[in-house]
Image 1 (cartoon, rainbow, N blue to C red):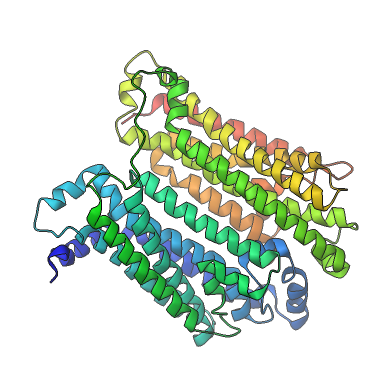
Image 2: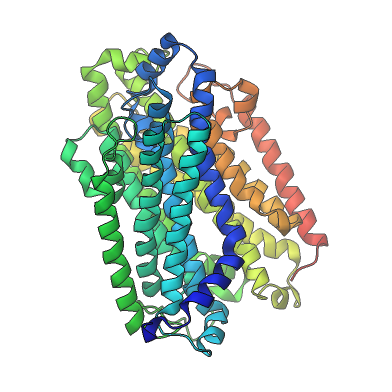
Length: 530
């Protein structure tokens, strides 16, 4: 065996045994996303008329194309599955691969476990190679599980195989991306941010291309666009998968080459030194801001970028509505003007931005517990600092930062959309973004309550984000009852441009937010702190 990979086999066995429980939920989630589409299709759309109506209303909706990609065939279960699960399944597969690689390579250096491993008989490249191999194996197992379970629930053999292969390919490509980001970042958190940001850019570019109905060749500008060209259930073209495998090999080779030249415990991009004297960090409020400063800047830049992309997308969609009034009528039956149709599109876009803002807020909340398990909170509380004040310093940022990001995105979207549709007031778009903020706060408050009262239930914050996305974006596709859709706080956000917008539901959501916040402070006051 190559001396640089000595010890790979026993390390792989140990790492898989330790990480299996973390990997399994990803495989189950993505497999369920695919199998549920096939299972529910015949129940929700039992006849040809309902399926044709689905194709007519959803297949031409640019907002849904942004998320799910092009709908090439909504008249069959396999075609519906390829549309509903294709882009999302690839996105989650890539996330799974990123977290596996960084957790088992760079995070071990931060915790000190890598140094213990390196003291034994182990090659220099072993840890990174094993981390990437774990992600590769997980992606392959995901593809096989998704294929077999989807077929068992009624999916076609070849159609399901092509779709599942795109999940595996997405995981493989971003295994290489994560391997490189683990060498660039100064720590595991930075490495994850770089890789996830790369994935986010690829997904947004792919969505923009699909929603704006650009030329066919443009889809090849993003690796996620390559997977669309597999065309599960309508073409089953395998050769784009070979291109994905080639990219994976190149990225993995670059990652290993960078790893061979990187200093242990450091990144290729060195972190900036801190100030010699305490300035703003001398207070608990300044400390909370300093801890979250990097993510805050990165996310605000991301929201500005999203606002720019979605704003230009709105202008192109407005042109589509103008040239095809029938399409507009199918998308939004209640809107009768081009401006009204465009605003209905922007409402969907702002809901999506709201979900992204909730991810940002939940991430800040989770940082509270991360600081706690790193034993940085107890020394602060040992002085005169009260628990309520410490939690408040972080909670204010968790609520304010996503709200600011949502307003930044909404303002930019409104300004750009107004240039394409002068009859669309910028203030209406900003007002709709502002109305979305209380719904986003409800999700963040749930995460805060979990971390504050019982950190063992902190996964509830991420589950709330997933459930909100599923109910807001996917729920209407399956014609769920209103009381189920109402579980999502975003369902209660009214259209602010209507004659008499109903804010009663949003008021109730605000009440729930206050109650959850109170639970967070009460629980944090009485529970043990690590």
